[in-house]
Amino acid sequence: MGSYSHDQPRKNDEELLALGGKITLTDQEKKVNNCLMQHKLKETNFAFDNPEYFNFTYHFFKYKADIYTSKVYKIIKDLPKGAALHLHDVGILGPDYLMNITYMSYLYVCFVNDTVQLMFSDHFPNNACSGHWQLMSEARRLSRNVTIFDAELRKHFTLVVNDPAKVYPSIKNSWGAFSHYFNTIGPMLSYRPVREKYLYDALKAFREEKIMYVEVRSSLHKLYELNGTTYDPIITAKIYEKYIKKFMKDYPDFIGAKLIYTPYRKIDKKLLAEHLELALKIKGEMPDSQARDVEVLKTIP
Image 1 (cartoon, rainbow, N blue to C red):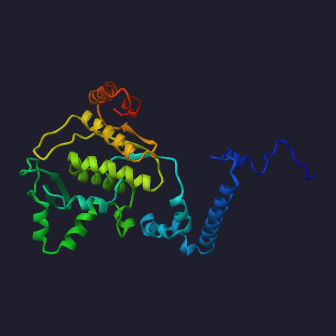
Image 2 (cartoon, one colour):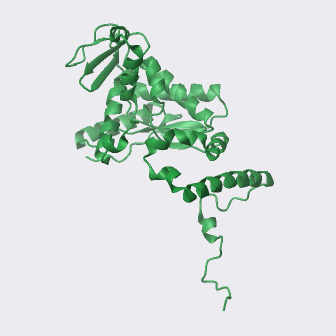
């Protein structure tokens, strides 16, 4: 009675199976871990003792800003991290960054009901728009209230709303808004100089968060110039390679980045074959680095 059986797991067996469970910490690392765990237990115990303040009982948008006040968050923010392995290339930087882009010259805008189309051009865009194209600078001037104009425009660059339960009653609504976001910003971020700077700034943002390796998913949009010139998707891949190398040269401590070619999944077999051909072409034209850094995810025909 009370004796230990070999069929019974030891107290720490489950901990050993966890990620990092077999790592032996140094004395200094133990001090850091103890400090972190003390703050973590303090926050979780407070939440369970005061459920009305337990954030997870609310929608993420409701307590998103409160995360930055957490002592645990502040500690983790300063700690080195491994990698970010699932990134949509034009979904990395936030709405404030995108709003700064809308103040650049040559950006045209077309408002249609609750949607907005954005495109850089040195002439009146030929792209179809049921409303009318105008320079963003002109649209701001005519708005008479730039603060309100920018606040309304910014809503197209984020999924965050004040009443998420009403706006997103189901995942279908969330995915609809998610798709709308990419359809809105895609043309604006496909202007070559903007995409190049965006990629570099995205890598910089991750490094500042102590994330030293990323895997970026991209459908390799055709980039364009102000005069309407467009580039083959393989040029987009080469630009990614160029600016990843440039960033690693500027910041030698950054481990690297990987490009994962991820075209739209719901396509027919003919288009699937074209995507596979492009993936092989990328591997063939960039054998030194990009050849081992391009993958085609499973596509649903």
